[in-house]
Length: 365
Image (tube, rainbow, N blue to C red; front, top):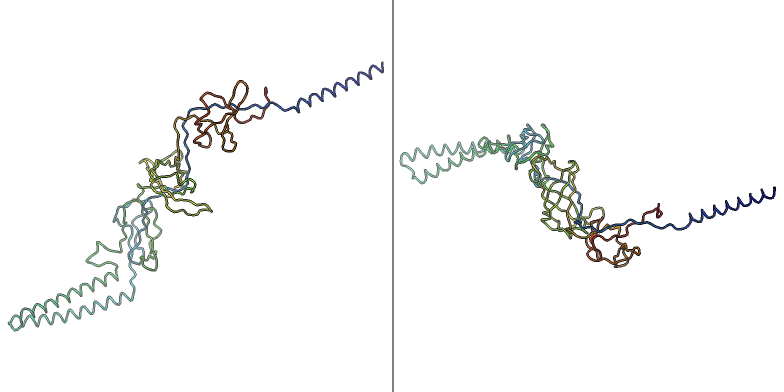
């Protein structure tokens, strides 16, 4: 009995060992790979590029004073609409003492000359009334008096301009009143009442009192890489999406491509501009970040497959087509790709099944 029990234990251990070995052997055998099956379909393929940039007004004007002085009053603020020639601010003139002294001296000299001219005229008129001088001599003295009167008037006007910034004879065109040169929206007023401002001259650009822009005429301004700029041409349609406005897209038309590249982070970039059409119910603010989608190429109603089904060997492009005998290789001619699908010009027919990417699971599981 002991021998029988011993044999049974040996048999059990042997069977367990063989079973374990068989199980592990089956687990180590290569599993049959299962693949996705893809099917060519008729579709439209569009290849586009995305350009980042900003939306800004086409015309943005900095309003600067014609004279130096201090801001006395501000009649507008940022965000206000403004008409051309409408007053934005008033400047109080701080006269230059050298110019003021010169203007005052000119007035005094003109008064002396006028006084002498009147004396000469009165004397000449008395002689003319007695027929003691000729008419030509009388006209010459009278003309000298008129010139002296005009010189005094001009000297006083010059003094007023130096002292007050405006003459009494030309108050409507006062340079102390800062007017907008265009109609539009005031984007910024960087000065406050009491700030000193200077006019533009050969030594500086002058102080900007206001920035005005026509917000009804907007453009998209961005940069595109040199590898794609060759496919662009003016007049191409552009689709604009604005980050600050969810689910809003705007139509635009490409109207400018820079003839010269600029280097940005080591890459050559070309500036592009597109005129943006903004619906009346949408408010766009200057400087909004935006993306412009530009269609570079398109193909309509073409046979296409996912790019994952395409294989490459040198200059040859091929796919694996499902047949009753299994997957068989077939060369194809491809066309336009949008990065997900690719056009197949030759080698496939609609309805055929193709081998796609390998699925990592065993057959029958």
